[in-house]
Length: 250
Image 1: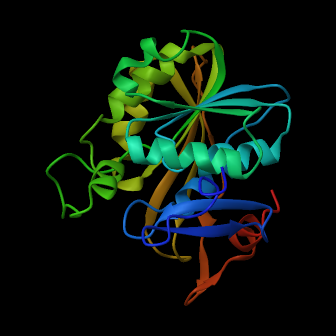
Image 2: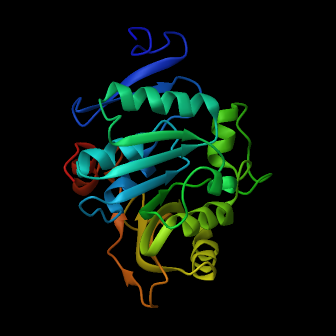
């Protein structure tokens, strides 16, 4: 157990979140979580005793943050990559959250083999933004699969969410702003009606880089467009809202 709770010296770092309230093993050269994950964990609606699923959990940062936000929820964290699923499990153990978070190694395209249909209140998802074959591919496999639609495209993640959610259950996603129409159209096609939307901009006046969307299974039409979220004031100085989020002030 002692070695299990330590980073693999040549391959991993152990990073602190929220002033050390959460700790996280991450690959030095492979996949590392970004601000996207914190934005998603902050954006999604969380209710008491919700049963969550996180599709493509990576190293497990979104479930860790959600479990910190609301202690009564439970979370199924699904990851297709062996190394990341193993790391996510170690992060759950490291933060003493095994009673709240269950990590499952599996493919969202076979979600029926991983969890019971219609048994979740909410799904969160940070799917790959880039189509397979587009842009520059990272030489690192973990980064390739996290960024490009190699082991599952947007419709695969949405179909999995639609299967898992009970009626009126919620799905929240963070996605590339340039593919927002693809996202909204696919959500509506699967009866995951978009209900809340927020654009994310690096700077005031800059084009949006990300979009946060929350939908409701079998929900009525009608969407609330929230004020834009600005990441930086100037240079590398975070805006007040993002600085609070990074400090864990949800």
